[in-house]
Every structure is written in C-alpha cells, then in structure tokens.
Length: 85
Image (cartoon, rainbow, N blue to C red):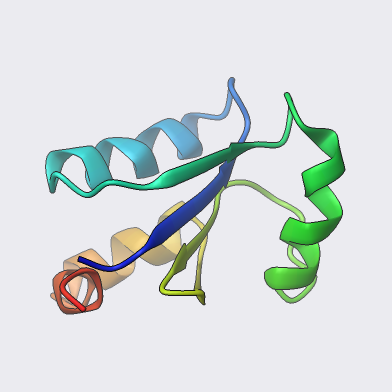
C-alpha cells in the first residue's frame, strides 16, 4: 500500500471529505493537522508547490493536490492504482 499524507484543518469540510474517501477505501494515512501544529504550514506550502489551502494530499511523496483533485482522480479511475503501489 502506498504511503499517504494529508495536511488538514479541523473545521475544513474538504478535509473531512478527503479523509472519508480514504477511510472508505481502508487506506491508512498520516494526518498533519496544521491548526494544531502551525509550524508545519511552511512545509506543506513548500511541498505543495505554493498551494496554501487544505487539504493537501501526497501519495508516495507525490503531490496529488486537494480534495477536488483527489475526487477527480477517483472519478477517472486513477486513484486506486496510485494507492496500490
């Protein structure tokens, strides 16, 4: 299974939606809560090529994007192959 990392905030509906999809697929992920650990925000921005919104999702250190980006991969049938690596 691929290593999945997700940068989130507690009251972000997109974060909740992204995590729900991963949980439905029984994918384990590392969650970085930048509202609890604001010192991680610059790291997230750097890894996400300047993107500042949450969630920011990484699969095997590859930047996937945000919730909508991950949902688009799912709709095209491209998410599962990334998660199976």
